[in-house]
Length: 141
Image 1 (cartoon, rainbow, N blue to C red):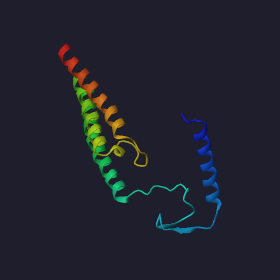
Image 2 (cartoon, helix red, strand yellow):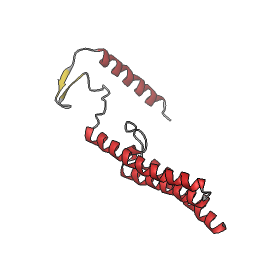
Image 3 (cartoon, rainbow, N blue to C red):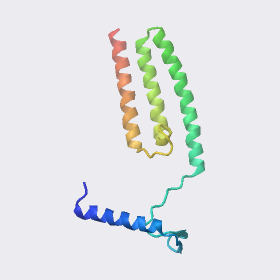
Image 4 (cartoon, rainbow, N blue to C red):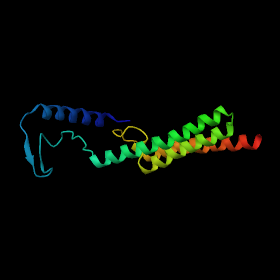
């Protein structure tokens, strides 16, 4: 939570950035080594095309693996193999966990930044819980 001084500072910085975005005169900055509107202007982050291509390829591979596990899951459910269904669900979430560990942006859209910790927590819990339920159902039956 920001205090009064921080709110005032952000308000002033927004005002400065609005004024600088309205200005048409640009100048060369030796610090930035580029032509800029001003030093307080918000810069868009450039993404590397190779990284986006890598993420798209990993998403395709992950989708193919999950599709195979999903078809096996559908087959197990039609045969009423409930324990196999939980084990296959854990394999699906384990696949998501591995790909999320390699590159967290493969799980969700590539333009959003998702922390690796959040991906590992979410799919790690899913994997462990579905494995636990599968093992409990195997022991009970």
